[in-house]
Length: 460
Figure 1 (cartoon, rainbow, N blue to C red):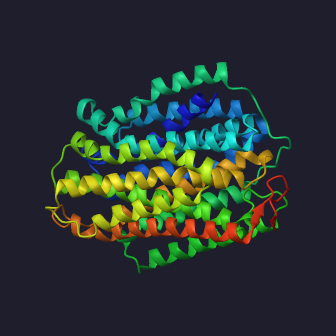
Figure 2 (figure 1 turned 135 degrees about the horizontal axis):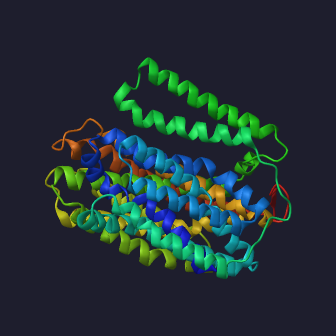
């Protein structure tokens, strides 16, 4: 059962990053520039981030296996539409539908696993396996994408999903039991709409800002609209008896830091992947396969360190792996703050390796902390909060990185990307500070009783 659920998670994570290395080929094939290419990636992540919370609640209400299998079918159909898209508009629309299907896979699969493993230690180990698979999928995406684009063209990036979908559907019917939450929660449609609009508005401003001007009237109106949607979401959720997202949980420093850490880790990863793709292919003239192969150190670092991180969390808690995650991520970003057209390949590979190691160490402590910080009866929503934070980080990372180099020439792209590498280092620093906060909280004896409705914090 864990293997089947991890297969779906591998698919969602792979599709988040596999498209990155194919972006230049997609741009040439459809005749579009960087701004449209950003929407090709972020249409998927925005919809995925916006719907994860509701998908978890739907799974708790109507059955997790049923929602899981429905998500597989939607994801598969949208993948075929992406592969046959005649224009960038059709591709972006199909990617948005793909995000709908993905939102029904990520939190639901983790909820199935968590509910099948009541023992806290076993659940922590399963979270480590889960994080390992997710980290592996995110890291190997560029390598796989580069090989597919080189041999079969960019449309193969989406055809590849078909056999995985068929296998997951068959295996889930055989091995995954049906389960539901003990109490079905009502759907929060106003909260759902406002959450999706708020995420989309902020990411849209970052993508379109370089094109319309950061201080233009259109940009100022967009800032106001995004802020209004955010405030509206907080106001609606604060008044509901059973909200889409329990904002009171964010009063907990441990839970809040886990969510913030998930955003930071995925901002760092996606900034690295997009800047790497554009720099290597546009500035250095690498082929898609060579650009994907250059990220192999990142894949190796994430693959080796993610399961190690899971074991460390089970043995000593989250502080040590978070410290390692922050240190390695910060080092990877600092390696490239002076990037230019002639930066040595060994230094590039070292930076990718360090970033991959940092990402590998980050996922398990973040996942375990966030899932353990909510009542088991709301496992679907618990998983969805973590997954939402990840996808928000992915969308923000793509938007920020694309904005930095949107108007850069191939010769000037390296210099324009330098603030992005500083951002990667800052994300690493944030993860390291999270580890310090975790130690401070443990010293003060603050604990969370996950069986208490509303997850109240108390001093032990």
